[in-house]
Image (cartoon, rainbow, N blue to C red; front, top):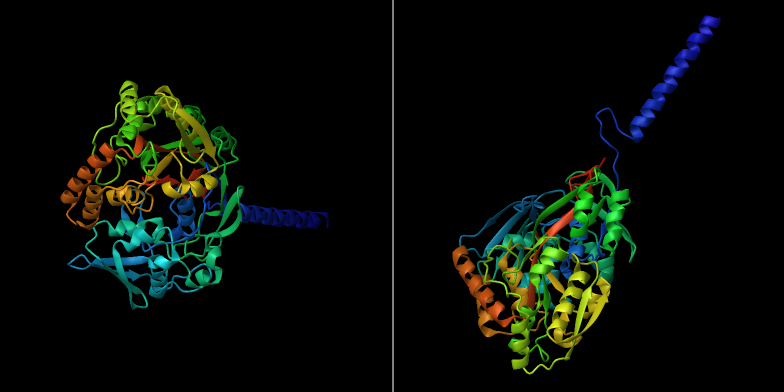
Length: 517
Protein backbone atom coordinates (compact mmCIF):
# COMPACT_ATOMS: atom_id res chain seq x y z
CA UNK A 1 0.00 0.00 0.00
CA UNK A 2 2.83 2.40 0.89
CA UNK A 3 4.47 1.68 -2.47
CA UNK A 4 1.18 2.37 -4.30
CA UNK A 5 0.66 5.66 -2.40
CA UNK A 6 4.23 6.71 -3.21
CA UNK A 7 3.71 6.03 -6.92
CA UNK A 8 0.40 7.99 -6.90
CA UNK A 9 2.09 10.92 -5.13
CA UNK A 10 4.98 10.91 -7.60
CA UNK A 11 2.63 10.86 -10.59
CA UNK A 12 0.61 13.72 -9.12
CA UNK A 13 3.75 15.84 -8.66
CA UNK A 14 4.84 15.13 -12.23
CA UNK A 15 1.43 16.25 -13.55
CA UNK A 16 1.53 19.45 -11.44
CA UNK A 17 5.07 20.14 -12.61
CA UNK A 18 4.02 19.72 -16.24
CA UNK A 19 1.03 22.05 -15.74
CA UNK A 20 3.29 24.64 -14.13
CA UNK A 21 5.75 24.36 -17.00
CA UNK A 22 2.91 24.67 -19.53
CA UNK A 23 1.50 27.71 -17.71
CA UNK A 24 4.90 29.36 -17.61
CA UNK A 25 5.36 28.70 -21.32
CA UNK A 26 2.01 30.23 -22.28
CA UNK A 27 2.63 33.40 -20.27
CA UNK A 28 6.25 33.82 -21.28
CA UNK A 29 7.59 31.89 -24.27
CA UNK A 30 6.50 28.73 -26.08
CA UNK A 31 8.70 25.89 -27.21
CA UNK A 32 9.81 27.88 -30.24
CA UNK A 33 10.98 30.75 -28.04
CA UNK A 34 8.29 33.20 -29.22
CA UNK A 35 7.93 35.95 -26.61
CA UNK A 36 4.45 37.19 -25.74
CA UNK A 37 4.00 40.78 -27.00
CA UNK A 38 5.02 43.45 -24.50
CA UNK A 39 4.37 47.15 -24.02
CA UNK A 40 6.71 49.67 -25.68
CA UNK A 41 7.20 53.16 -24.23
CA UNK A 42 8.51 55.98 -26.44
CA UNK A 43 9.58 59.33 -24.94
CA UNK A 44 9.46 62.23 -27.40
CA UNK A 45 10.35 65.90 -27.15
CA UNK A 46 6.70 66.88 -27.66
CA UNK A 47 3.41 65.20 -28.47
CA UNK A 48 1.53 64.92 -31.78
CA UNK A 49 -0.91 67.73 -32.47
CA UNK A 50 -3.46 65.90 -34.63
CA UNK A 51 -4.01 62.34 -35.89
CA UNK A 52 -5.58 63.24 -39.22
CA UNK A 53 -2.78 62.66 -41.77
CA UNK A 54 -4.34 65.02 -44.32
CA UNK A 55 -4.55 67.84 -41.79
CA UNK A 56 -1.11 67.46 -40.22
CA UNK A 57 2.28 68.82 -41.22
CA UNK A 58 4.50 67.93 -38.25
CA UNK A 59 6.65 64.83 -38.00
CA UNK A 60 5.51 63.91 -34.48
CA UNK A 61 1.92 63.59 -35.67
CA UNK A 62 3.15 61.64 -38.69
CA UNK A 63 5.10 59.25 -36.44
CA UNK A 64 1.77 58.39 -34.87
CA UNK A 65 -0.25 58.12 -38.07
CA UNK A 66 2.35 55.75 -39.55
CA UNK A 67 1.17 53.32 -36.85
CA UNK A 68 -2.54 53.87 -37.41
CA UNK A 69 -2.79 54.02 -41.18
CA UNK A 70 -1.57 52.32 -44.32
CA UNK A 71 -0.97 54.01 -47.69
CA UNK A 72 -1.01 52.90 -51.29
CA UNK A 73 2.79 52.71 -51.25
CA UNK A 74 5.38 53.30 -48.56
CA UNK A 75 9.15 53.29 -48.00
CA UNK A 76 11.40 50.44 -46.94
CA UNK A 77 14.30 50.78 -44.48
CA UNK A 78 16.47 52.19 -47.26
CA UNK A 79 13.91 54.80 -48.28
CA UNK A 80 12.86 53.04 -51.49
CA UNK A 81 9.25 52.93 -52.69
CA UNK A 82 7.56 49.59 -51.93
CA UNK A 83 4.01 48.23 -52.07
CA UNK A 84 1.61 48.59 -49.16
CA UNK A 85 -2.15 48.71 -49.86
CA UNK A 86 -1.42 48.69 -53.59
CA UNK A 87 0.10 45.44 -54.76
CA UNK A 88 1.19 46.94 -58.10
CA UNK A 89 1.01 50.18 -60.07
CA UNK A 90 1.74 51.63 -63.50
CA UNK A 91 2.18 55.04 -65.14
CA UNK A 92 0.79 55.94 -68.55
CA UNK A 93 3.15 56.66 -71.45
CA UNK A 94 2.47 60.41 -71.25
CA UNK A 95 3.09 60.39 -67.49
CA UNK A 96 -0.33 61.87 -66.72
CA UNK A 97 -2.10 58.84 -65.22
CA UNK A 98 -1.05 56.52 -62.39
CA UNK A 99 -3.05 53.33 -61.78
CA UNK A 100 -2.93 51.24 -58.60
CA UNK A 101 -4.25 47.71 -58.11
CA UNK A 102 -5.23 47.17 -54.47
CA UNK A 103 -4.85 44.20 -52.18
CA UNK A 104 -8.15 42.40 -51.79
CA UNK A 105 -9.83 41.61 -48.49
CA UNK A 106 -8.18 44.38 -46.44
CA UNK A 107 -10.39 45.88 -43.73
CA UNK A 108 -10.22 49.02 -41.65
CA UNK A 109 -10.01 48.79 -37.88
CA UNK A 110 -13.80 49.34 -37.75
CA UNK A 111 -14.25 46.20 -39.89
CA UNK A 112 -15.38 48.12 -42.99
CA UNK A 113 -13.80 47.18 -46.35
CA UNK A 114 -10.84 49.01 -47.81
CA UNK A 115 -11.46 49.28 -51.53
CA UNK A 116 -11.13 51.76 -54.38
CA UNK A 117 -14.15 53.71 -53.14
CA UNK A 118 -12.42 54.27 -49.77
CA UNK A 119 -9.26 55.46 -51.50
CA UNK A 120 -11.24 57.88 -53.67
CA UNK A 121 -13.15 59.13 -50.62
CA UNK A 122 -9.88 59.87 -48.82
CA UNK A 123 -8.28 61.77 -51.69
CA UNK A 124 -11.45 63.60 -52.71
CA UNK A 125 -11.68 64.84 -49.14
CA UNK A 126 -8.20 66.35 -49.13
CA UNK A 127 -8.62 67.70 -52.68
CA UNK A 128 -11.80 69.57 -51.68
CA UNK A 129 -10.63 73.12 -51.01
CA UNK A 130 -13.69 73.81 -48.87
CA UNK A 131 -12.45 71.27 -46.30
CA UNK A 132 -9.40 73.51 -45.73
CA UNK A 133 -7.13 70.60 -44.86
CA UNK A 134 -3.45 71.27 -44.29
CA UNK A 135 -2.36 68.91 -47.08
CA UNK A 136 -4.71 70.35 -49.72
CA UNK A 137 -1.92 71.97 -51.75
CA UNK A 138 0.29 68.92 -51.25
CA UNK A 139 -1.95 66.94 -53.61
CA UNK A 140 -4.06 69.55 -55.43
CA UNK A 141 -1.02 70.91 -57.25
CA UNK A 142 -0.66 67.75 -59.35
CA UNK A 143 -3.79 65.57 -58.98
CA UNK A 144 -6.63 66.46 -61.35
CA UNK A 145 -9.11 63.63 -60.77
CA UNK A 146 -9.46 60.37 -58.84
CA UNK A 147 -11.17 57.47 -60.64
CA UNK A 148 -12.64 54.21 -59.35
CA UNK A 149 -11.88 51.78 -62.18
CA UNK A 150 -13.19 48.71 -60.33
CA UNK A 151 -13.63 47.52 -56.76
CA UNK A 152 -9.89 47.09 -56.33
CA UNK A 153 -8.42 49.44 -58.93
CA UNK A 154 -7.97 53.18 -58.53
CA UNK A 155 -6.38 55.65 -60.93
CA UNK A 156 -5.26 59.27 -60.67
CA UNK A 157 -5.37 61.72 -63.57
CA UNK A 158 -2.49 64.18 -63.16
CA UNK A 159 -2.41 67.79 -64.29
CA UNK A 160 1.07 67.27 -65.72
CA UNK A 161 3.80 64.60 -65.63
CA UNK A 162 4.99 64.74 -62.04
CA UNK A 163 8.27 62.91 -61.45
CA UNK A 164 8.10 62.53 -57.65
CA UNK A 165 4.40 61.51 -57.58
CA UNK A 166 5.01 58.14 -55.89
CA UNK A 167 7.00 59.80 -53.11
CA UNK A 168 3.93 61.98 -52.44
CA UNK A 169 1.69 58.93 -52.17
CA UNK A 170 4.26 57.35 -49.81
CA UNK A 171 4.21 60.39 -47.51
CA UNK A 172 2.13 60.19 -44.32
CA UNK A 173 -0.57 62.34 -45.94
CA UNK A 174 -1.28 59.47 -48.33
CA UNK A 175 -2.86 57.45 -45.50
CA UNK A 176 -6.27 55.97 -46.28
CA UNK A 177 -9.17 56.74 -43.91
CA UNK A 178 -12.23 54.68 -43.07
CA UNK A 179 -15.02 56.65 -44.81
CA UNK A 180 -17.49 55.47 -42.17
CA UNK A 181 -15.37 56.89 -39.36
CA UNK A 182 -14.73 60.20 -41.15
CA UNK A 183 -18.48 60.72 -41.53
CA UNK A 184 -19.19 59.76 -37.92
CA UNK A 185 -16.42 61.81 -36.30
CA UNK A 186 -16.67 65.03 -38.28
CA UNK A 187 -14.47 67.71 -36.70
CA UNK A 188 -13.37 65.25 -34.01
CA UNK A 189 -11.57 63.07 -36.56
CA UNK A 190 -8.10 64.26 -35.53
CA UNK A 191 -8.68 62.81 -32.06
CA UNK A 192 -10.49 59.62 -33.12
CA UNK A 193 -8.94 58.22 -36.32
CA UNK A 194 -9.57 54.83 -37.90
CA UNK A 195 -7.16 53.47 -40.49
CA UNK A 196 -6.05 50.06 -41.70
CA UNK A 197 -2.65 50.08 -40.00
CA UNK A 198 -1.10 47.66 -37.49
CA UNK A 199 -2.12 49.72 -34.43
CA UNK A 200 -5.36 51.29 -33.20
CA UNK A 201 -5.75 54.38 -31.01
CA UNK A 202 -6.59 53.24 -27.48
CA UNK A 203 -6.24 56.38 -25.38
CA UNK A 204 -5.07 59.98 -25.65
CA UNK A 205 -4.50 62.00 -22.48
CA UNK A 206 -3.28 65.37 -23.83
CA UNK A 207 0.07 66.40 -22.40
CA UNK A 208 0.57 63.00 -20.76
CA UNK A 209 0.39 60.06 -23.18
CA UNK A 210 -1.03 58.55 -26.34
CA UNK A 211 -1.53 54.78 -26.28
CA UNK A 212 -1.77 52.63 -29.40
CA UNK A 213 -2.82 48.98 -29.16
CA UNK A 214 -2.06 46.18 -31.59
CA UNK A 215 -4.60 45.55 -34.34
CA UNK A 216 -5.06 41.76 -34.15
CA UNK A 217 -6.71 41.70 -37.59
CA UNK A 218 -4.00 43.62 -39.44
CA UNK A 219 -3.67 42.27 -42.96
CA UNK A 220 0.12 42.28 -42.71
CA UNK A 221 0.22 40.15 -39.55
CA UNK A 222 -0.32 40.91 -35.88
CA UNK A 223 2.24 43.40 -34.44
CA UNK A 224 5.06 42.10 -32.22
CA UNK A 225 4.31 44.45 -29.32
CA UNK A 226 1.07 44.72 -27.38
CA UNK A 227 0.93 48.50 -27.06
CA UNK A 228 3.02 51.53 -27.97
CA UNK A 229 2.79 54.56 -25.67
CA UNK A 230 4.03 58.00 -26.71
CA UNK A 231 4.99 60.24 -23.79
CA UNK A 232 5.85 63.93 -24.32
CA UNK A 233 9.03 64.69 -22.35
CA UNK A 234 10.38 68.15 -23.34
CA UNK A 235 13.34 68.03 -20.94
CA UNK A 236 16.30 66.46 -22.72
CA UNK A 237 17.99 65.04 -19.63
CA UNK A 238 14.72 63.51 -18.44
CA UNK A 239 14.35 61.55 -21.69
CA UNK A 240 17.90 60.22 -21.42
CA UNK A 241 17.37 59.14 -17.81
CA UNK A 242 14.16 57.36 -18.78
CA UNK A 243 16.09 55.39 -21.39
CA UNK A 244 18.89 54.51 -18.97
CA UNK A 245 16.50 53.31 -16.26
CA UNK A 246 14.25 51.40 -18.67
CA UNK A 247 11.26 53.66 -18.02
CA UNK A 248 11.37 54.34 -21.77
CA UNK A 249 12.33 51.84 -24.45
CA UNK A 250 12.91 54.44 -27.18
CA UNK A 251 13.67 58.16 -26.97
CA UNK A 252 13.83 60.84 -29.66
CA UNK A 253 15.64 63.06 -30.02
CA UNK A 254 18.82 62.27 -28.12
CA UNK A 255 20.75 65.48 -27.53
CA UNK A 256 24.41 65.38 -28.62
CA UNK A 257 25.67 66.08 -25.10
CA UNK A 258 24.15 62.77 -23.97
CA UNK A 259 25.43 60.61 -26.83
CA UNK A 260 28.78 59.51 -25.39
CA UNK A 261 27.31 58.71 -21.98
CA UNK A 262 24.52 56.64 -23.52
CA UNK A 263 26.98 54.84 -25.78
CA UNK A 264 28.76 53.71 -22.63
CA UNK A 265 25.60 52.06 -21.29
CA UNK A 266 25.59 48.34 -22.10
CA UNK A 267 21.78 48.30 -22.19
CA UNK A 268 21.39 51.10 -24.74
CA UNK A 269 21.98 51.58 -28.48
CA UNK A 270 22.38 55.06 -30.01
CA UNK A 271 21.28 55.28 -33.64
CA UNK A 272 22.76 58.15 -35.69
CA UNK A 273 21.38 58.57 -39.21
CA UNK A 274 21.17 61.19 -41.99
CA UNK A 275 18.26 63.61 -42.00
CA UNK A 276 16.48 65.66 -44.61
CA UNK A 277 15.70 68.16 -41.84
CA UNK A 278 17.21 71.62 -41.70
CA UNK A 279 17.02 74.15 -38.86
CA UNK A 280 16.53 77.82 -39.59
CA UNK A 281 15.05 81.11 -38.37
CA UNK A 282 12.39 82.55 -40.71
CA UNK A 283 12.24 86.36 -40.61
CA UNK A 284 8.92 88.13 -41.12
CA UNK A 285 9.44 89.91 -44.44
CA UNK A 286 5.99 91.50 -44.23
CA UNK A 287 7.14 94.00 -41.59
CA UNK A 288 10.06 96.33 -40.89
CA UNK A 289 12.97 95.98 -40.55
CA UNK A 290 12.87 92.50 -42.12
CA UNK A 291 11.35 93.78 -45.36
CA UNK A 292 14.86 95.07 -46.18
CA UNK A 293 17.11 92.42 -47.74
CA UNK A 294 20.17 94.07 -46.17
CA UNK A 295 18.76 93.38 -42.70
CA UNK A 296 18.07 89.74 -43.52
CA UNK A 297 21.54 89.25 -44.95
CA UNK A 298 23.04 91.05 -41.94
CA UNK A 299 21.40 88.60 -39.54
CA UNK A 300 22.80 85.71 -41.55
CA UNK A 301 26.31 87.15 -41.18
CA UNK A 302 25.65 87.76 -37.47
CA UNK A 303 25.10 84.11 -36.54
CA UNK A 304 28.07 81.86 -35.76
CA UNK A 305 26.80 78.64 -37.29
CA UNK A 306 30.10 76.75 -36.97
CA UNK A 307 30.04 77.16 -33.19
CA UNK A 308 26.41 76.01 -33.03
CA UNK A 309 27.29 72.80 -34.84
CA UNK A 310 30.56 72.14 -33.01
CA UNK A 311 29.68 73.23 -29.48
CA UNK A 312 25.92 72.92 -29.07
CA UNK A 313 25.45 69.86 -31.31
CA UNK A 314 28.88 68.33 -30.60
CA UNK A 315 29.38 67.92 -34.33
CA UNK A 316 26.08 66.08 -34.93
CA UNK A 317 25.04 68.39 -37.73
CA UNK A 318 26.39 70.38 -40.68
CA UNK A 319 26.42 74.11 -41.42
CA UNK A 320 23.68 74.76 -43.99
CA UNK A 321 25.00 75.46 -47.48
CA UNK A 322 21.55 75.70 -49.05
CA UNK A 323 17.93 76.31 -48.07
CA UNK A 324 17.25 72.57 -47.70
CA UNK A 325 19.29 69.66 -46.41
CA UNK A 326 21.86 67.67 -48.36
CA UNK A 327 20.03 64.26 -48.32
CA UNK A 328 17.12 65.81 -50.27
CA UNK A 329 17.04 64.90 -53.96
CA UNK A 330 17.83 68.04 -56.01
CA UNK A 331 20.16 69.55 -53.40
CA UNK A 332 23.19 71.57 -54.45
CA UNK A 333 25.47 73.70 -52.34
CA UNK A 334 25.21 77.45 -52.93
CA UNK A 335 27.46 78.33 -50.00
CA UNK A 336 26.89 79.37 -46.41
CA UNK A 337 26.90 82.93 -45.10
CA UNK A 338 30.21 83.19 -43.20
CA UNK A 339 30.26 84.47 -39.64
CA UNK A 340 31.10 88.16 -40.02
CA UNK A 341 29.60 90.38 -37.26
CA UNK A 342 31.34 93.50 -38.56
CA UNK A 343 29.74 93.06 -41.95
CA UNK A 344 26.42 92.48 -40.18
CA UNK A 345 26.77 95.80 -38.31
CA UNK A 346 27.64 97.62 -41.54
CA UNK A 347 24.59 96.24 -43.37
CA UNK A 348 22.29 97.10 -40.45
CA UNK A 349 23.64 100.66 -40.46
CA UNK A 350 23.13 100.96 -44.22
CA UNK A 351 19.53 99.79 -43.75
CA UNK A 352 18.99 102.49 -41.10
CA UNK A 353 18.54 100.05 -38.19
CA UNK A 354 19.66 101.93 -35.10
CA UNK A 355 21.59 100.20 -32.30
CA UNK A 356 19.18 99.05 -29.61
CA UNK A 357 16.34 98.33 -32.06
CA UNK A 358 14.00 95.89 -30.34
CA UNK A 359 13.03 92.62 -32.06
CA UNK A 360 11.35 89.42 -30.88
CA UNK A 361 12.82 85.92 -31.12
CA UNK A 362 10.51 82.97 -30.43
CA UNK A 363 11.32 79.28 -30.05
CA UNK A 364 9.70 76.01 -28.99
CA UNK A 365 11.45 73.94 -26.34
CA UNK A 366 12.03 70.22 -26.75
CA UNK A 367 10.52 69.89 -30.21
CA UNK A 368 13.77 70.06 -32.20
CA UNK A 369 17.28 69.00 -31.33
CA UNK A 370 18.64 71.58 -28.83
CA UNK A 371 16.10 74.13 -30.08
CA UNK A 372 16.01 76.41 -27.04
CA UNK A 373 19.79 76.30 -26.60
CA UNK A 374 20.35 77.22 -30.25
CA UNK A 375 17.79 80.02 -30.06
CA UNK A 376 19.47 81.44 -26.96
CA UNK A 377 22.84 81.36 -28.72
CA UNK A 378 21.36 83.17 -31.73
CA UNK A 379 19.84 85.73 -29.38
CA UNK A 380 23.35 86.44 -28.09
CA UNK A 381 24.73 86.72 -31.63
CA UNK A 382 22.06 89.23 -32.64
CA UNK A 383 22.52 91.28 -29.50
CA UNK A 384 26.27 91.38 -30.21
CA UNK A 385 25.60 93.29 -33.44
CA UNK A 386 23.50 95.89 -31.62
CA UNK A 387 19.94 94.55 -31.56
CA UNK A 388 17.78 94.36 -28.43
CA UNK A 389 16.38 90.84 -28.66
CA UNK A 390 13.33 89.85 -26.62
CA UNK A 391 13.41 86.06 -26.18
CA UNK A 392 10.36 83.85 -25.60
CA UNK A 393 9.98 80.06 -25.47
CA UNK A 394 6.73 78.14 -25.87
CA UNK A 395 5.25 74.68 -25.46
CA UNK A 396 5.04 73.02 -28.89
CA UNK A 397 1.25 72.96 -29.26
CA UNK A 398 1.00 76.65 -28.38
CA UNK A 399 3.94 77.53 -30.61
CA UNK A 400 2.38 75.82 -33.63
CA UNK A 401 -0.76 77.86 -33.18
CA UNK A 402 0.99 81.24 -33.18
CA UNK A 403 3.57 80.68 -35.95
CA UNK A 404 1.53 79.81 -39.02
CA UNK A 405 1.15 83.11 -40.86
CA UNK A 406 3.56 86.08 -40.75
CA UNK A 407 0.90 88.74 -41.35
CA UNK A 408 -1.68 87.27 -38.99
CA UNK A 409 0.64 86.22 -36.18
CA UNK A 410 2.96 89.22 -36.39
CA UNK A 411 6.11 87.53 -35.13
CA UNK A 412 9.60 88.87 -35.94
CA UNK A 413 12.00 85.90 -35.99
CA UNK A 414 11.01 82.34 -35.15
CA UNK A 415 12.93 79.10 -34.88
CA UNK A 416 11.66 76.58 -37.38
CA UNK A 417 12.79 73.29 -38.83
CA UNK A 418 11.75 71.72 -42.11
CA UNK A 419 12.06 68.07 -42.95
CA UNK A 420 11.35 67.34 -46.61
CA UNK A 421 9.00 64.45 -45.96
CA UNK A 422 8.98 63.32 -49.60
CA UNK A 423 12.77 63.49 -49.89
CA UNK A 424 12.37 65.63 -53.02
CA UNK A 425 13.36 69.24 -53.71
CA UNK A 426 9.83 70.19 -54.71
CA UNK A 427 8.45 69.67 -51.22
CA UNK A 428 11.62 71.04 -49.65
CA UNK A 429 11.28 74.37 -51.47
CA UNK A 430 7.79 75.07 -52.79
CA UNK A 431 5.86 75.14 -49.47
CA UNK A 432 8.45 77.41 -47.87
CA UNK A 433 9.40 79.84 -50.64
CA UNK A 434 6.58 80.02 -53.18
CA UNK A 435 4.40 83.10 -52.67
CA UNK A 436 1.39 80.83 -52.05
CA UNK A 437 3.40 78.18 -50.19
CA UNK A 438 1.51 76.47 -47.38
CA UNK A 439 4.44 76.97 -44.97
CA UNK A 440 5.72 80.32 -46.22
CA UNK A 441 6.58 81.54 -42.71
CA UNK A 442 8.72 84.43 -43.95
CA UNK A 443 6.11 85.86 -46.31
CA UNK A 444 8.59 85.86 -49.20
CA UNK A 445 7.18 86.76 -52.60
CA UNK A 446 9.46 86.69 -55.65
CA UNK A 447 8.20 86.23 -59.20
CA UNK A 448 11.43 84.73 -60.56
CA UNK A 449 11.56 82.25 -57.69
CA UNK A 450 7.89 81.34 -58.14
CA UNK A 451 8.54 80.59 -61.83
CA UNK A 452 11.48 78.32 -61.02
CA UNK A 453 9.59 76.40 -58.35
CA UNK A 454 6.67 75.92 -60.71
CA UNK A 455 9.03 74.71 -63.45
CA UNK A 456 10.75 72.29 -61.09
CA UNK A 457 7.39 70.79 -60.14
CA UNK A 458 6.22 70.34 -63.72
CA UNK A 459 9.46 69.08 -65.28
CA UNK A 460 10.02 65.34 -65.61
CA UNK A 461 13.67 65.34 -66.74
CA UNK A 462 15.87 64.82 -63.62
CA UNK A 463 18.88 66.78 -64.93
CA UNK A 464 16.72 69.73 -65.89
CA UNK A 465 15.00 69.66 -62.52
CA UNK A 466 18.35 69.71 -60.70
CA UNK A 467 19.46 72.76 -62.71
CA UNK A 468 16.17 74.49 -61.94
CA UNK A 469 16.51 73.93 -58.20
CA UNK A 470 20.11 75.11 -58.21
CA UNK A 471 18.94 78.38 -59.77
CA UNK A 472 16.16 78.61 -57.17
CA UNK A 473 18.55 78.00 -54.28
CA UNK A 474 20.77 80.85 -55.46
CA UNK A 475 17.83 83.28 -55.38
CA UNK A 476 16.75 82.04 -51.95
CA UNK A 477 20.23 82.58 -50.57
CA UNK A 478 20.41 86.11 -51.96
CA UNK A 479 16.94 87.02 -50.70
CA UNK A 480 17.71 85.48 -47.27
CA UNK A 481 14.16 84.96 -45.99
CA UNK A 482 15.65 82.74 -43.27
CA UNK A 483 18.72 82.75 -41.12
CA UNK A 484 20.12 79.52 -42.58
CA UNK A 485 21.72 77.55 -39.74
CA UNK A 486 22.27 73.80 -40.14
CA UNK A 487 21.35 70.41 -41.52
CA UNK A 488 20.43 67.97 -38.78
CA UNK A 489 21.36 64.40 -38.03
CA UNK A 490 18.83 62.09 -36.40
CA UNK A 491 19.87 60.66 -33.04
CA UNK A 492 17.62 58.03 -31.48
CA UNK A 493 18.09 56.05 -28.29
CA UNK A 494 16.85 52.45 -28.14
CA UNK A 495 17.11 49.85 -25.35
CA UNK A 496 19.10 46.79 -26.50
CA UNK A 497 16.18 44.47 -25.81
CA UNK A 498 14.20 46.28 -28.52
CA UNK A 499 14.56 45.40 -32.20
CA UNK A 500 13.01 46.62 -35.44
CA UNK A 501 13.16 50.38 -34.72
CA UNK A 502 14.60 52.60 -37.45
CA UNK A 503 14.23 56.03 -39.04
CA UNK A 504 13.76 57.36 -42.55
CA UNK A 505 15.75 60.41 -43.66
CA UNK A 506 12.48 62.38 -43.47
CA UNK A 507 12.63 61.99 -39.66
CA UNK A 508 9.93 59.38 -39.39
CA UNK A 509 10.51 57.13 -36.39
CA UNK A 510 9.24 53.77 -37.66
CA UNK A 511 7.92 51.56 -34.87
CA UNK A 512 5.41 49.28 -36.57
CA UNK A 513 7.95 46.40 -36.72
CA UNK A 514 9.25 46.87 -33.17
CA UNK A 515 9.86 43.81 -30.99
CA UNK A 516 10.57 44.05 -27.26
CA UNK A 517 12.25 41.01 -25.71
